[in-house]
Length: 485
Ligand code: SF4
Image (cartoon, rainbow, N blue to C red; front, side):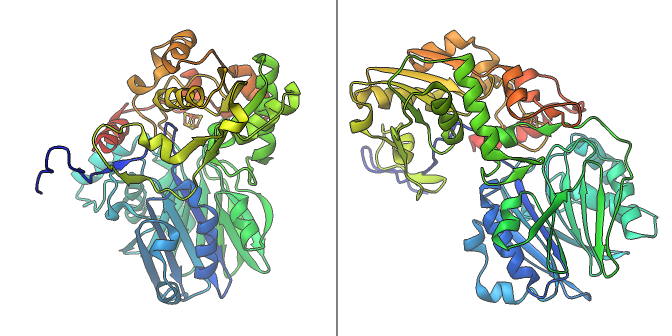
């Protein structure tokens, strides 16, 4: 590669700044519909927010399984011809934002293997905390892995199972893994969906005429006019085949640990997640925030899109007008070509632009879902002041994020999380806001309806990890290397 002339445009592609935890994957599965692959494509479209690095669909006509997948958005990966090649009335689909494993094509899912049981495809949302140990054991016993993903471990365990029935072999392999998994499997004869006993990641069951449908979120059911039946329960394995849909619970029950961040940020606001509408949760988070941390200001502004629901709730509870003080450009990708050296903050400016007419001379409270590193918040506060805001206050609709996630969310290392080593006052000074307040842990749980029947994981806020991590930081280190690459 030639080096750029001094002062000339280096034309290097840089990641756009995005100071958020990132969702992991989206799943879709359907059995018993002649347009299975096309419906999977639509389902993945609705789930695109859960993963933008790769997309794939495996479909079967009852004899063989065909697979099409690639890097990029659903729209980039699939053409009419590729979809038409996926014949059959059963299919599974996957969109991915890499968690464990590298950002390479070999990690795009679904995976399709051929073993002594015949072909099987798999799509995984979540992260296994004992994958490294299992992988070493399997490699020592002769297994050869094709990817760096934890999901492949499940396929090797499945291939080694001596159980006869499909669902028994799948259950036996899942019995050995620990951590977060919502899964879809496809064989020529059946669609199988499974969820870990803690229910970390969402998975719902729907119906479209006589076809069974599963998806990460109900927004995928809505797009194909499927009816929401219920959540796939924590610890449940569902099998859809020519005999209909049957369910069993092969794992010992555990207290639920639904990822609370699905309600705070990840899931689409129009979805039902863990039995609750996500927009309703966000409105409640904002209302609770206004009760706990009021602000004496003229206007409530969301940081779009992540702070929208909470800002609306904050405005309704406080009686302070809600206005669009920042506008987001929705037509940017995840990277940009840097125009000139020295314009380091351009990433935030490409995405967000303040509306001077709304904020000039006014006291503004900005609402966001979280602060991860703090660098983006600092730039946004600066932009608001440059655009004439008299005061800039910040309110966050979740507690300080003090720890990484090991259950399938892309997070930086603990040392990169500003709240892991700084007090709220120190963070306020760093982002240069006039005031800063976070929602309390109790307020968070109250807003999402946490109760004895529906417990949530809050580990990245509280440090209380529901499933012990056997090799801490292994997957985290990989993510960190990826982020730095
Ligand atoms: Fe969700 Fe945080 Fe728990 Fe991960 S650690 S599952 S992001 S609540």
